[in-house]
Image (cartoon, rainbow, N blue to C red):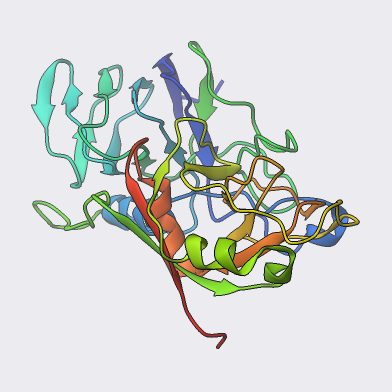
Length: 289
C-alpha cells in the first residue's frame, strides 16, 4: 500500500468523508450529500493548499484521532475543538505540519457540532457519481470511518496558507432560517402558518445529516390525508404527521409524501449544521426571489 495514507486510530461518534457532493442526480433518486458546513470544508482545504472541492473528513461532536503514514499538512476548522499532535496542543483553524507516524487528535467540539479535517492532497477514496462523499441515506460513497480504516491521500497540489489563524463564524447561539413559504403551505391552517414563522423552536437531538429536526409548536393540518410522493429539494421544510418541522439537509431523500410548508435559503444551511441540540430556531418568512 502507498505510504501516502492516513490511518484512523479513533473514528469518533460519526466521521465521514465529504466533498462538495453529487448534485444533479435527483432524477435518479440520488441525494446531493457533501459537507453540511460547506464554507468550513472549503476553508480548511484552502489552508492546506488543496482545491476547495477536495475530500475532507467531517467529524460529529467527539472528533477523531488520525495517524498519517507520510508527512502532511493538516487544518481543522468548523466547530471549535482542541487539536493536538503527539499530545502537544497545535492551532485550530491554521495549517499544521504533522510528521509521518505522529498522532493527530481532533478533540470534542467546544461548541458547534461538526469539525472538518483537511489533509494536503485530499482524501482519495474512489469517487461514486463524481463525488467521494459518504451518503448516509443511500449508502453511496465510503462507509463512515471505523477504527483501523486506512484512507489513501492524493499528492499535494499547492502551498499551504501563511496564516496564524483563519477567522470562521461562531456556531449559532440562535439559528435564524430564512424560509420561502410553499409549495404546500395551503395544507396547514392559517394559525399553523403564523406559528411556523413567529414561534420559537429548538434543535432536537434527533437531528442528523438527513434533516434538522426541531421541537416546538406542532403545525396543524388544514386538510387530511397524504400527498402522492413528490420531489423535494435541499432546505425543504417537511412536516410529518406529528406536526414537527424537519429541515432537509445534504443527505435528504429526493422525494417525499409529507407536505412541504416552506424552503430554507441555501446560505442559511451551514449554520444549521453547527446548531447543537437545544439551540433556539426561528423561521423567518421571506418573499420569493
